[in-house]
Length: 495
Figure 1: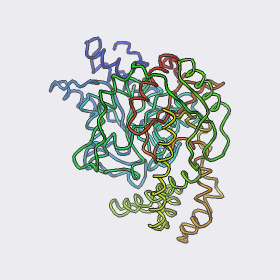
Figure 2: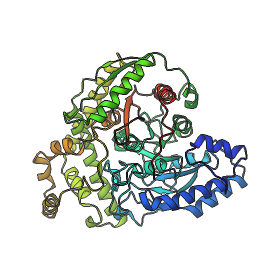
Figure 3: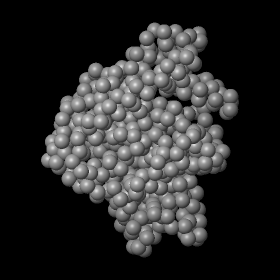
Figure 4: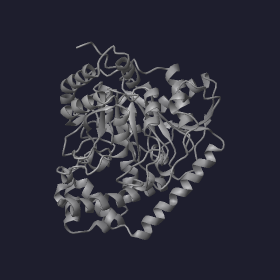
């Protein structure tokens, strides 16, 4: 087997295959060897589809299907990225026997581009947390430090890419689930604009449009080229977003111009922001100034607690609906769901429809405020997260609270949980470590996390940029400029 550098990005690997310097079979074998060697330590890949991958590869080349990423190994996230007839668990014991009834459009587009699917990655149950520690699959570990989380909900995808098992993996982002793992694992993570990538055929919009699909990558150029692959509506989608003026891949290396950049390091929830996260933004601001951009303190006029309440209200409602659907469609029992999921669903089930609508209506105000900010500034710079990655198990619900939750659930008092003010408490507690990412989800704006900085222990620290809706091109130009000015590809975990 040839020595295939696991640090190669997908673009470079595809070029090697296309030139015949390595065969796609050799690349696949190398990826599977890394999977066997590394996955037992990080638990990133929870479904191994190597036989199907070999069959897919054979079919591709037998039929002359040579997409731009032909032969490049790839992993799907086990939520919304389905292959017909294959498991679709959402990391829940309630869905462990569920097989996908159809292939999702995004998974089909990835395969049409030549990506070879090796399996599926770990995530928290129903993708509900910023850590990846489901009871069904067990915790996923950060390749940079195995005692810490890779983040969530696309934690398995991030860990697999950071460890070098694959150069790129499918991810999704409903409240930061691409950007948070990117920050913790030293990767580039772009959340596209609302509507840019289709959820067909299973849904029109996910979480009222807050959630979107893309990838986690090591390089900006991979993310840009793969956005070209998946962008665009499918028949039956509620609307079609205007296509970019040119392929996103052409934005990589294009001059971004002299940008007006507002930055803020204050938590929208008023909580503490770790000094390393603050320093990462400040160092990035100095770098941007050295590149000719105008950088100054500024932030959109948004009530952070109101935004968190609105986000969690929709989140609660959707968890309640999905849990009910699993029980009705798949014969699941309440005990098949994790305790935290059941508590969230109980709160959601007690939420009146009128209140749900009112919470959703607030999103318009946040979008208008962000648009007013963008009238003066091209992009907003913040920390991606407020705190470094938690240790495995650190954010588990304490035993005393678990006992109280079980009692409340047994008595059917989910409404009581909501009336006690727990929603405000959860808004502050559950989002305290990650308060910066939800703004882009509720407004539909594109956002990205860049791995420009490291902390004193050598762990990655991400910084986030948010652009106006539809301006992925602007983010990619800026990202490529920063990647060239302060490369991160040479930084690799020691695993």
